[in-house]
Structures are given as structure tokens and as C-alpha cells.
Image (cartoon, one colour):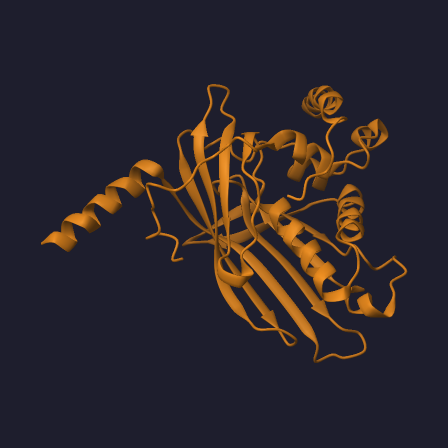
Length: 277
């Protein structure tokens, strides 16, 4: 019954969404700039964007037959436990035999919590030459970090292959729509907690040209838990070239923690007072 109700609500949102096109869209604990720009004049509607990512051309048939992975990613309210402005921190790590390895930070800045518990969000996704700019979102119920990860990944595959990012996004969406979740346990801190694992390979059944053949076995793994703020614990991709076993790429985005804006202000104030003494 809950899934039916959610699907009905989703259909009503879809009617609004039909006129929209698909938009392309630091040491984390210390970086608490009170003057950070928070301009929402060009913000996306977060739930409309999430609907579009999670369905194919808004077809009602897909909503009726929605996979458990689609429900977990595109329907569940990942941010419901967050009741005040906060920042969620993730570590991003890339290991590659073809390009430079690097470690960076991703921050979801929940700037405002509305009366209906939806969120206004801005993003800091890496920095320097690896930085990716994403527009802010309003009305968010779900955690958009997985979509940002897919967006960047699709653009990166486009850059490396000369292919089309729309093709890569489309294959990811299609595969999620046919993927079911697995219930697992993960070690989080000093305890084991229940989690969901979503694992899929978007390109195994796709006719790929030579320039993208190395992505044939590319695997995506998403681990989520409702015991973690924002639900998303880890996202990982792994590539190993079938013709060259020494050619590999692994990228990982992993949850690091959450701080309320109030906590960040207090920490900032303490650092200032310490610097003066």
C-alpha cells in the first residue's frame, strides 16, 4: 500500500515535470565559511530532477513495475531525519592506471529546512581541476549525492572516450530500473548495522565501440542505510579492461560524517578564540 501511495504521489509530480528538460547539472571539517554564497535563483527542483533520473521518459509502465533499487534511490526520503541546516561530508578517492590518482572532498550543504521538511541544498564537489559545479536544489527529500556521482561519471566517460554523456546516463538509468537490492550488514564505527546494496553493470549487454570497450564490465555498487544521515554510505565504480588486465580504474565516494551549522559555528568560534590566545 505504501508503494502504491508513493507511486500515485510520484505520478502527480511527473505531470509537473513533463515540461522540464534534463539539466546537467578542503579539509571538510575546518572549511566553515560563514560568507559562502547561497544563491538559489537558478536552483533546480530536487524531486522533479530525481523523478526524471529514476524513470525513462516518464512512462507510467516503469512506475508500475519499479524495481526495489529504483524505490530505494528515487522514492525513499533519505533526508527525513535531518531537521536543521547541516553539512554532510563525503570523501572521494580515484585510483587509476591511466590518470593521476587523487583524494578529494564532497560536501552537501543543507542550507534551509522548510516546514514540510524538504531541503534547500548547495554542493561542493571536489576542488581545483577536479571540481564539478552543480546548481543548487530546492524541495529535496532524497539525497542527490548519488545523482551527482553518476553525472560526473558520465561526463568523465564522455571526456575519456569521445562518446556521449547522454548515452552513459541512459544506460545507467535503464539498468537501475531492472535492478533489485540485497540486504547486507556493514561495519560502521564500532558496530554492525543493516544496509542495502545495489550492484549493477550498465554496459554488459551493450554493443560498444572499441574506444569504450574498457567499460564493458564496469560495475557500480551503492550501499545505503537508514541508520546513516542521508542514507548514502558508499558509492563505488570499478573497471578492469578485458584485454589489458593491468588497466583498472576505481572511484569511491564514502560518507565521513555530518555537522549541523550550529556545531560548525561553535567550532569556528572556538578556533578564533584559540588563535587570539
